[in-house]
Length: 310
Image (tube, rainbow, N blue to C red; front, side, top):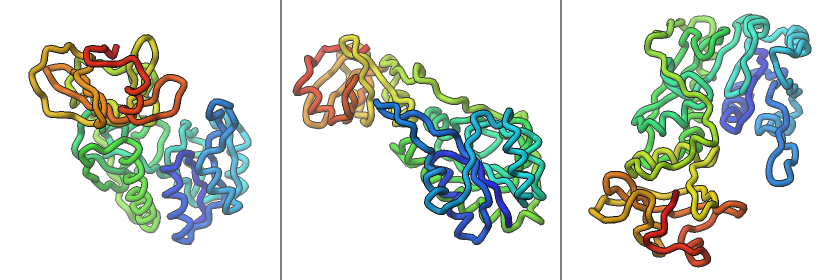
């Protein structure tokens, strides 16, 4: 089958690789433009572009796909059987969606209609879900609202971070995607129940601020959902500190207020949270520095029991 693949991050590479292994012909890959990265703001290609270039598959990177007439010309020249979309990052216009023989299908990292939008994995962890999964659906002009083709559930592991969960979803999603492509002629279409739809908008940096008056369970979910991007953070002496990793400790009655440090040792930094709950910071990243062990940070910082994280 002739396929045009739309995708950008590492999670999309799993599907692209599986499609090629199954013997399909990927004629063109459309991915996001190279983006500045790191302190030097060096332009960095997407993981999908890197993978495509290693296999000499043509790549096109429209700045805004809706306003780029060359994309339609390229697809008409290929005359694909199917468009496959996995975490591409832009809204695809109808002129491209319905051009192939079998239209376009999308792999989404949630059990639709739950968590339509750009950040379903993050929101599933943020909300404390026990079960998530992947959905293959037929693309239409509205966000994640097309007919359902296949679903597969996955249990969220205790203490799992968003990027870890996303990789597991990418692996099972790639398998389900290829099974769906094999059955594309006969697979039944199921309408979504739009009344059950929930949304997972892209996370913003400011959403990562930790509110220490919340229970440690809620704080733990935020840190796991926001790491590595856009990051969960607090402030110490006006300087931002990203909390990279930690865990919930057993709650014990104490007189410290939310955000105050209960104790420091080699295990990390124990912080008082809402309802007498306790969170242990094990790894953090001070402003302008690399991530480090929390205990190592305490050895060089002006920090002691009673110091408050804001």
